[in-house]
Length: 115
Length: 112
Image (cartoon, rainbow over all chains, first blue to last red; front, top):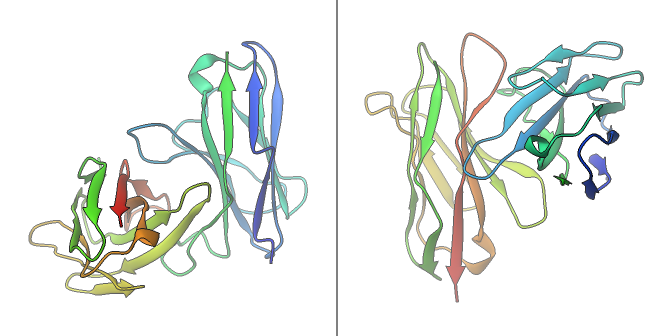
């Protein structure tokens, strides 16, 4: 079972460059999430989606855009990368937005460095 | 606002030692509480959860009890193994919205 797959696993960018992180899940989950993980801090929600064609802002959305054109894919874009966006990015999915009843399934993460 | 505070790491123990990782929270109402674990190079996995006061979550020898009077959800294990080395995250789901609130994580290192 693949679960949640993130690509790429590592990437180094120069300031101002753009890139897209891909998240794919094969569990037919409605809900998908993008988090960033920084040293000494908990995960912070960037954007999330409650279904195909929908997206919503999380706690730290600035500098990022997302798209959910297909139910199984959730893309995170950086239009003009900044050093402050150096982080580890995690994608997650769940059957229900109520994590209580359906724990979120996480990908293995993408380590992104902005020089 | 709602928040989760975990003990700072790393926590270093010898194999078979007793483990406690402290987690306290601030929240209104009746949140649900979770422990997630992140093994090296992997994503997070749900370890255990508790949905109401005095509930005890347990999994893989780990336990945590939801203590509303002390607003705590400490993670314990009686005898740790090298394979338990990981980062442990405490998280809270407020009863007023659907976004998990995460602690900063505690790195656990178990030496043989």
